[in-house]
Image (cartoon, rainbow, N blue to C red):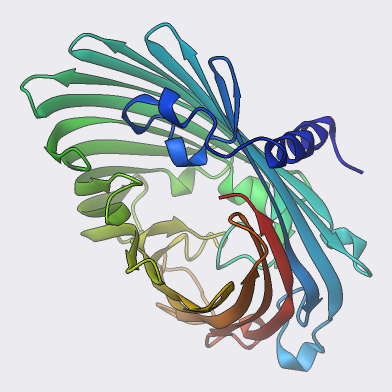
Length: 410
């Protein structure tokens, strides 16, 4: 059954389908909001609703089990309504988004869930000074990442603020801070470990930097920050990190879209006996469209991630995902995607571990054939395969998912 939030979003989607897409495109100054994404305009209140029906098909390994454990298969589907909101209040902008994944499995009811996320921001321009305030909330019953295969309940609540001072015509000074609370449910466990006990934490970040607006569509930032992680029930994991990064941001209407960052992180556990990490980090999310026919996209990451295993408390995640979408003819297109993630674990000194300095790999590949029923409505047949290789027999798995999807909006 849909929640009240979902009913509102679905209603907005159908309202948007009846309203011209060009409405309010001229009302959005400087790309905020993105004119191409505005679907409904009610005076100063702008809305872009979207909805997608994904994973309508068969999941051949519901629990990511090894072959000798007789992997379970089931019919599944996911419905994702979402909406993005903007409100002009004087010279300021209020923005928010709501998203909910409704996940259904036919046989294994324990895997069904409603995953909700909220986020809001307030941008306040004051002559040469811009203030930003924001908050977010996530309530999900899903896998936390590439390591933990159990779908478990957790919440993430955070808030942030920042100041941008335009010192020169193209140069601004930045100051920002944020706080995030991660809280797992009491019954969230994986391989006998309590995820609440091992991973509940409070993360505090503060820093600053310099931003240079190279072109109207491209900015370059040099930032430095400090991150303090404090674990609620496992202080052996507490750590401090000092980081510096060079960040490129590209406007949604630029030839290259997205962002790319390369930096350096000095990760230091506060309790002796765990090897620190110092080295370069990356975070990339870029796309490029060639001749309006071919779209290339790349996502990449390299950074520290916490493990549920107290004897191997963290790992270095290095990964890349590539995709190519090609319009074949008329309304038909094809998409190919491939990715690899590397999890390199660090051992606690003196701890007994099954495999010392373990390295796991998660490989994925897949594709889809799509048909555009309209400018914003796409139906597709999808095939995706995931595989994890590791020296731990119980953690190996292969998973093939075959199904259909239907997406409306951006």
